[in-house]
Image (cartoon, rainbow, N blue to C red; front, side):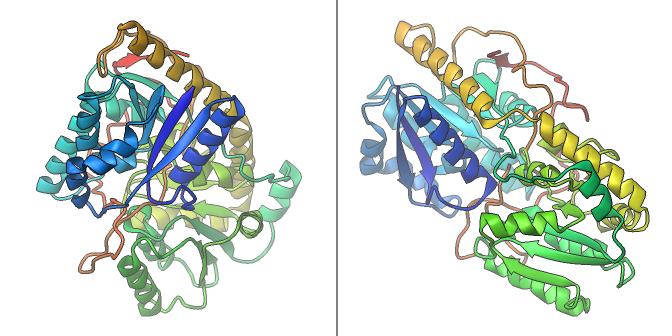
Length: 432
């Protein structure tokens, strides 16, 4: 197949969502497909909506493709462009959905607006590839039962952890503070401020925190976090490492006890899975797809958004009960080993695309409308992404707004799954 793959900005951006896109593209190319990457200018929301008026951008998308894949992050620009394409091309359009913007809570008018835009975007699709059952359920609730969907969870095999149960046990029982690591873009959705607030409630000699991630997506928020650290007098215990190359990040994970990213929402949370590969329990968001890989109290903790008291309780337990830390670390490693690999997920995507293209060619489908094929994706509990794109600090604006915002713990994240990753609810699902 010849595939167009549309993204915002630079495909090499170092976030979980873009890493997912890169691995998917590489896997498709390994199977003999030609994949042409089409990069759209990254617009501040909602400025991207005006891209729908651009004939030049529409021409870029109207290539000799068998199918057009789109990262849903670019939906503000694509919602209008796709409708222009529909008027002149029969090429099916499939979205890669890491998480929906409207899954994040925000002010009611902003949430209504993003929901309306994303619903209109989904209405023009022939299919959606989701990174978790949670993400698929939110897509189906918004798009309705006509849209074909499948789940292709990411793998956490970016590294070769080379760690066993004995090493996890030894590390957990080492004397000294609980070595906590945060990995992700320093944006509000990732909850770094809540993590620091929670840690500040613990005795000063019981923990350290290493922050690994770029501050560039939301400089205002990143500056606010540094001011928070200074105000709380935590400068000797919180270390900002910046963005690390893979080898240095692997060293940081191997040297840590727990990965803590208490996001307000994660479509999947690939960082959790990568940390689990090193035997790190995950302190994770209960909102979204993390529940599909994190078993609360066994391989980590699922916490409500913006809950420093819950964060403090969880980390206090791990700091004071090193036997429990060791058991959770071993369980995390075992869960990591059960995760499907990229080869399996890419093969699932390839079969899904073949079905969508076949339906479009034979006339069995309208946008979003081939016959349903019931069934699970067959992967078992899947999980994580999301990615660290965007966010804005109250009172400050970002020079670059990749389109995230602070979430509200009272919002229904639309997961549609229980804590074990089992399905609830309908939708026209393709079991592949």
